[in-house]
Length: 308
Image (cartoon, rainbow, N blue to C red; front, top):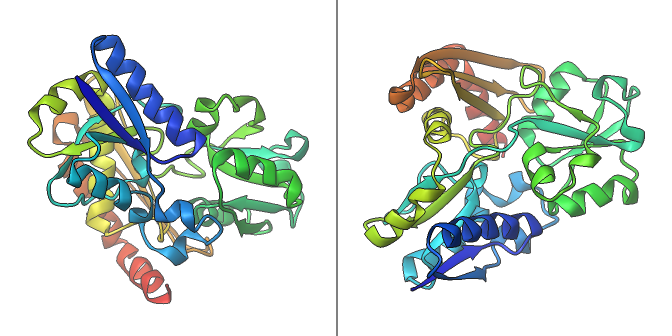
């Protein structure tokens, strides 16, 4: 039986697609699995700031069209890039176990974040990272950067940067973990909702694929990211606004969710934290969102959307 996995063409996206392929072949040796590379709008506009080209759909819509047309059977995404509201007819069939969820600093001479000199130029593709790190280091010069993970690492030298902020997960998956100078504490920079997990997208009601992708699912990660994505959905957020969220399950099946909304200049950071049963992850996410909105997050988000 043949299964076609849709994927972007970057090294990280192909690593992710091949991870799913290996897991599926291990569980179902008779499967014939192919990977089809699909170029997305985000790939075509690789030098344009993300905040200028739209929301997370720039990474997914072409792949989702292929799913809906039946030319591919499933898609593997970095979950943080997948919108909280999927197109009609598509669902998340599985969510992988998480890699390291933290953001990291890659820097010249492996300098640590607090050791960067005043005025040092630090690049990041994320307004969320920029806003939170500006809050604690307003003296740094933050600039936008685009490109695949390996391209951004190379730009450290070619564009005379002092540092780059990236996700630990992408570097680890590509075997570039030795480039990490420092892991950023989530208390300083809360990761993106869904960061370090992979989302397996499929057609709703496709029972055969549903049965197959069950081997890719991690229940604990699924519960955590359900809370994070529910919070993001309740805030109406996407990659154009600085929103962070991270949830973890403890041994008692209690889920602790932290959320943050910040102004792009980092001057104002609103945070909220709450806990609840892992079985009620969606309700927990909505509760944290309400707490953030009560503190004024809605004003920040509305103002930022008007500016953009």
